[in-house]
Amino acid sequence: MTANAGERNLMKRMKQSIGERITPLLIPLLFLAYFGRASGSLDPWPSLPAPLDSWSFRNHSNWTDDNSNAPISFANIFSSDLGDGNSLVINTDAPAWLNFPIYRSGGGTNIVVNGPGSVTLWYGGMWATTNGGPGQTAELLDIGESGSPSGYWGISIDESGSNVVFGSQDGLGDSYSLSSPVSWTTNYFHFLALSYSSTNVSLYVDGQLATNDPRGLSIWPGPAAISGGMFFGSDTNGAEQAAGMLNTVETYNSVLDSNSIQTIYDSQNFYALMPLEAGFMSISSATSNPSYTPTYEAISGPGNLEWLSSVGNCAEASEYDVWITNIVANMGSNGTMSVAFTIEGGEANVPYDVFANPVLHGGTNGIPWAWMGQGTPCNRYMLTDMPTNSCFLILGTPYTSNPGVGLTDAYELLVLQISPNGPQYDSSGIPYAWYAQHGLTTITNGLATSDPDQDAIVNYQEYLYGTKPQISEGFAIWVSTPNGTSSIP
Image (cartoon, rainbow, N blue to C red):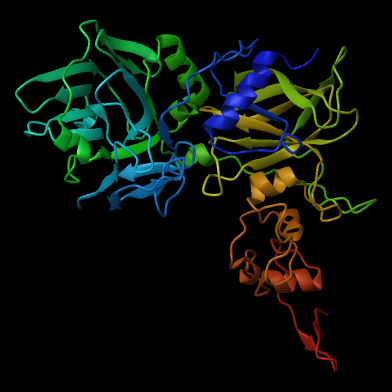
C-alpha cells in the first residue's frame, strides 16, 4: 500500500493554504487530523483557477499582498496569531484601514468590480450575535461609500451580527443587496465566498450556498469610487470597522462554482476550529531521551507516543517517503481526545519525529509545534490528552543540514522556529540543541541570561558548568581559582 493521489494532493493543497514552503526531503507529509471528521480515502482536489490576487497578511510591517505589492495606505491595524497565525485585526476606537488600489500601477487588477468575478475570505468577529453583534455595520471589504454619489460595492455584517450582506450602488439611486442570516460566536472564523455575474449572484457561508439571485448583477460603483481603491475591514473613512479578524482573502476574475467553493473551504477549514481560548494552545513538547552515541542527538526517544502494535502487510519506501494513515480519534472521559495512527513508508527501524499543533500556521509568527516523540514505520501509536477542537500532525524525517549538532531540520523549523541554514549557537555560544535538550524551546534574545529554575544561575552559566537549567541547584558556593575560572564545589 502506498500513499494515494488524494493524500498527496491534500499535502500539496495544505502546504499552499498555509503559505509555507516545506522542502519534501525535510517534511514529506503534512496531514490534517482534525477531530470530528471520519478518516478515510481522500479524493484528489479538482483544479482551481489562479486568483487575481491574495492577502494572507504575513507581512506585519508593510502589509503587502502575497505578491509583495504595497498598499496605498494603512493606519491603526494589528496582527493576530489566530487563524493560520497571521490575521489582520481591525477593531479600535481610532480610524483604521488597509487600502489597496483596484488597478495596480504596474498592470493587473486586484478585484473585478464591473463584470464576472468572485471573492473568498475568512473572518472571525470579536463579538457574538447573542450579545448584540458588532453594534454597527462591520465592513469586511469596501469600495466607495454607501449612499454617496460615487457609488459603493462591499461585503459586510449588519450591526446586530445577524446577517452577512453584499451590496452594490451606482451612486445614481440604483442599488443592489443580497443577504443571508448568520448566528456566530466570538472569535470563531467563518468562510465567506461571493460569486457574481450578469446572470447570477451567489453567497456562500462555510462552504455551503447560503443564498443566490438568478437575476444577476448589473449595478456597479462609479469611477470615483473605484479610483479610491478597496478597503479591508473598514469603510473609506476608517469607520464601520470589521470588529474582528480577516485572513486569506482571494479575488478571482471568474465565477467560482459550488464545487470550487467547497474545495477551497475544505483545504482551509482549520480556520473554523480556531476560537480564542487559552486552552486551545495547550499542546506542549514531550520529554526526550537524548543520546550521545554514535552521534549527539539532543532530541530522541518515544516521547508521548504510546506504542500499540506492529502492523503487518505494511508498505516500505525510501527514507524520505513516509506518511501517517488509519487515524482514529476517540473522546476520553476527562474531556480530551486520544488519537491512534499508523506510520507507513520510510525505512524500517528509522525513527521519525511526530509533531502536533492545535493551530496550523505559517512563518515564525505562528504557534510553535510540539514534539510528540519518535516512531518507526509499520507500527501503530496513540497520543492521549489531545485537544478536542483540532489537532494537526506532521511527520519529520531524520534529515539534518548539520550532522552532529543534535537537531533535525524539521525540529529546528517547527519547534524552535530557526533556520537550519543559519547559526546553530546563540550570541553567548550556547548551542540551540542544548536549549532544546532541556526543554527551552522558545528561542528569544534574552534566553541565555534568563533563570527558569530561579536558582541564581542563569542559562549560560548552567551550560558552562554542566548543570540543568530547569532543575534548581539549590544554594551554591562559587569558588574563584587562580586562572580566573569558577566552579561549583
